[in-house]
Length: 446
Ligand SMILES: N[C@@H](CCC(=O)N[C@@H](CS)C(=O)NCC(=O)O)C(=O)O
Ligand code: FES
Image (cartoon, rainbow, N blue to C red; front, top):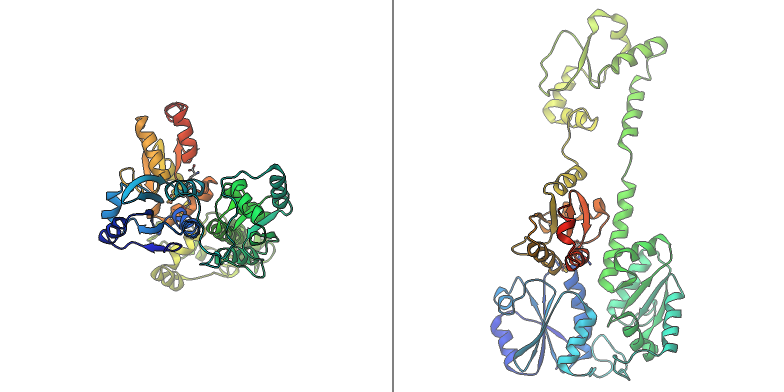
């Protein structure tokens, strides 16, 4: 019985299944890997397309013995077995390759009976490998172009016929995105044609273009084509962007306003005099005699005993009791830090700047060079090692603040990120391209 994905919980269990012969496809995944979550959905769709094969999922880090046995060095990772023997492997999130390799191992698609599982579609007529005809291509292009945001889905937005399609519709509605849609269950030519047209084997498929901000956000890291998880991620990042921009008050303006308020009681010449006095130093202590300075704050003082007018005119914010109380509770430090008098904790931006410049060649990656936790990171480490380039690294899986912060800092949404002398060189694709063209070493040493 195919059509469902099962979890493997031990090596014995897996050996048992493999011993039973037939075609078996294994998906090694990790909970922290977005790409393996996305591929998990593709995997379960494909399991419905190839019911004669067994589809098994292995949580790579929970099953080290199995992972080692199949030399799984990164996720997502797929192993294809026929009659107990490994016949092929695939590393990375590549839905078209996964579909192709499965059909090579299992034989042409033999979708199960209609109505089986989540995908209640009529059986496909032609094999998916037939290229769409020119007139079909035109039709598909017209559909894609008909709205700035267009969704190929199962069912309609009001009546989705698949949980994945429903999820994307919900996200788009939540975000207030207007979109056109096409129910691929009503037209098998479009359904099969779209898989080739977009080189993406499953539905829903979301296309975005045009310049509306929602569409632009949705589009940016995903090149106009999204599976369900990418859409969720993009929508989440759109929300995050809004929150960030709303919280950006210029702190300077707030401080200035306050200092104006505190002097607004005094009038005329006295006002200017007090203003001049209070502005003499960023911290100005009006006091009797001298005091110790436990917070080590630079300040000037004015002896109020020497000038009655100043003494009366100043409506002091706090005397010594208040100051001491503020010091005891830590509020004094906070207030002075907020006013920029005491050096504050390092801001995230400063921290990122320091990290980026901590080594001339600096790699932000998932995992460490000796134990990369993502195929993209692993490839960049190999390229750098092959070129004999020394590099520093930071494992972004250990620090979510750095992980998320760096995306904004560098305006680059993914990892790995490679920097040379604080400039972003790029991610995996760019580094591998430079490596292939023999330009990587020069780029990192010039
Ligand atoms: N095409 C990219 C591939 C890298 C990529 O897609 N990275 C993803 C998955 S590892 C990522 O970093 N996503 C954001 C995150 O995990 O925070 C490159 O050239 O570097
Ligand atoms: S592809 Fe999953 S962590 Fe990189």
